[in-house]
Image (cartoon, rainbow, N blue to C red):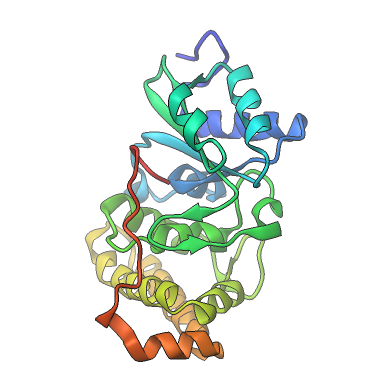
Amino acid sequence: MDSKNGIRADMVEEAVRVAEEAESRDVALRLLGGVAIKVRAKDGLQPTFEREYADLDWITPKGNSAKAQRFFESLGYAPQTRFNAIYGRERLLYFDEEHDRQVDVLVGSFRMSHEIPFGKRMTMEPLTVPLAELLLTKLQIIELNEKDVRDALALLHDHPVDEQDGDSVNAAHIAKLCAADWGLWRTFTANLKALDGHIGRYDLAEESKERITGRIEALLARIEGEPKSFGWKMRSKIGDRKRWYELPEEVEGGP
């Protein structure tokens, strides 16, 4: 059931409602995570990639924390008051108490195992961050879990790898970020290669499996072909002898 505040019981419907309401009120807010990947699937996710969603994940530009707080509270979400008072410049937590689910709002940047810079790209598309960033935020995690694998495969099944944004995964942008940051390159490419080994676990037609494999190979080739920065080359000499990722403490859940 929908709540008395108008919060939808269906997670995808609620995500779209919040995004559209934010747009109408000029609140810069974009969706991240698995729900964002489902929203971007024009023909719906393949049944094998469907999963339950525990929370909604958003990102808003730096300096927008106070505006985002007023916005979510006006929609009937309950603030995690102490957490927001301490960490509100970087992250906000809210709860939909009736449906027992969390809302996580990142402020300014996405940082877990690696930091993914958004800049002006954060709000360049409606509803969600661009597809390249959606894939980056899924595959920058040093240890992929089932939901990350499923979401990343779903995204690559539904969208081509190209040199532009919109309905494509912008390989040029991903390659540029990886060429500037050896650590991100190390984690992202390793996870991308690992994805190929998971495809057989899912109930997909051969054509679908080949489509995903082809897109993984195309993205890896584009990353490999991008000229690497001096900093990347220097860090690559150290390699795995020095840890190249962070292990951030999570409150609960995650994008």
